[in-house]
Image (cartoon, rainbow, N blue to C red; front, side, top):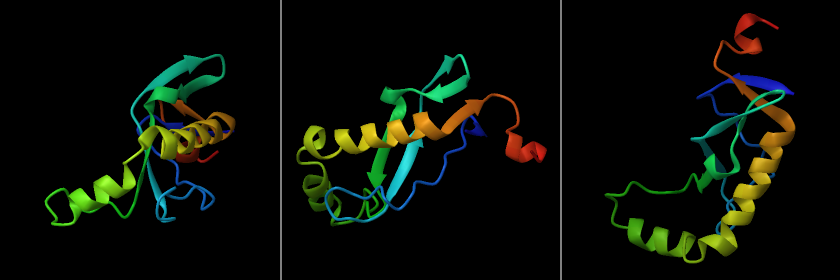
Length: 104
């Protein structure tokens, strides 16, 4: 089990890819819950998005958004769940410095 400080986000393994275009994913965690073995990401707080997402001001943003999020519950919810399960199996979070920062 790897311990990170809240706010730190682990890099996703390459096995997690965009369900639409196959590009890499970016991870965001915005909710944690306390458990017997430390803080963990809440399932509702784990969000992934494709790294190919253009800036909202780009001309192609609307087309990208419509193409990538036409059916979010079909395409993205299963990916979010798989990433959550991976986090659950491999990571806990702490409000204090992580073991990595302490040199352990």
